[in-house]
Image 1 (cartoon, rainbow, N blue to C red):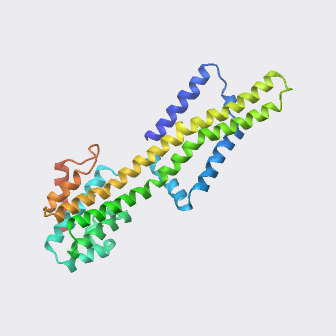
Image 2: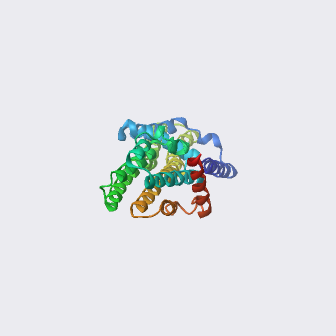
Image 3: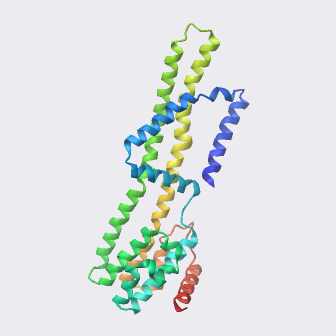
Length: 289
């Protein structure tokens, strides 16, 4: 996992270099400074966000650490499912297809692709727009505009976790300064103490500034970026569905329509033409069986 690897590299390089310069790690252990910084950050986080976003941030952090992004097989499953649906829509009546889109959890088409049906949001998205296509009164550009609006709404909702963590990362340097100022105030009350005692207190205060900047740019900032990357990739599946359905509405054959969807996949994870063709052949075999 690149996230864990990155954190390890940061800690080893930072603390290792500090020790090699002659520093003592016990000087950095100032628990009350960390409580001031992280406690204040968590408190302001709860002040700024409703509980729904707080829970979503927790989910987003888990997704970021696990790098829970769609894999090549996930893209092939969604494209194969769309191929079967579009092919059936060309040959079956409206009433026959409504059985599949109204109750996807009972549909043989959807049950053949558990990786898709286990995601209720994308399943609902597919069924909603297939239902609109079956009605037959909406024009392609109207459906496309509606899809764009919904995808933008989904993206905004998914990125609220990223914005919440980014706000915390932006606040941490200032909270570090607050902790440092409190440490300096404590040191000022000990001016009658020997220099070594006063030096220890000032050093402890400066740890607050160090910790605030480190937590911001070394942990929470990269974590927010990771959440954004993962959420954007997960949302990309909606664009794949959109491109495939719009191509079908504009007259493309099912095989050509899913090729439009394939092109919406990032080049790093995009299945090849051969892989997509094999997936559609297997989809046809599943349906025939």
